[in-house]
Length: 129
Image (tube, rainbow, N blue to C red; front, top):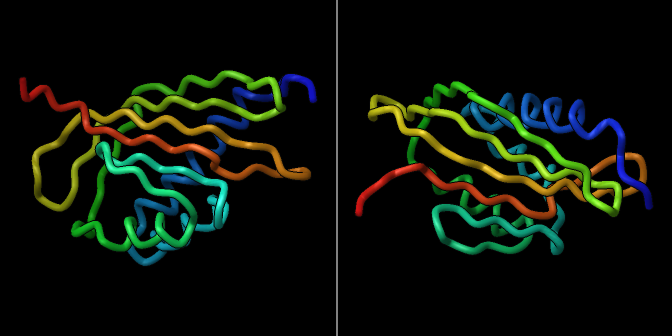
């Protein structure tokens, strides 16, 4: 499969759609539809999770309701299988907590004419050294 020439548009469009669903508490559980039942991996603050059912458990276990997000940059690269690597840098605030910088990286894997999230790594940019 060739490199996808529309990787930039796909990356930006995906980020907009993903966070639009994730940031809506009434709709948040629907992010599970981006993941494969068995072939998706998530690392959330160092915790490894595999498969959509376990990813949904993690999403539903998050204690916040309100989330405010500012995206600084979305950087995308094509992958050699026609997918897209996406790196998001931004700042978020949950409920009344302090805002924190975060980094989230996705790998979108092509399936037919669509994609699923094969890899998702989320980390708050905290410097507690």
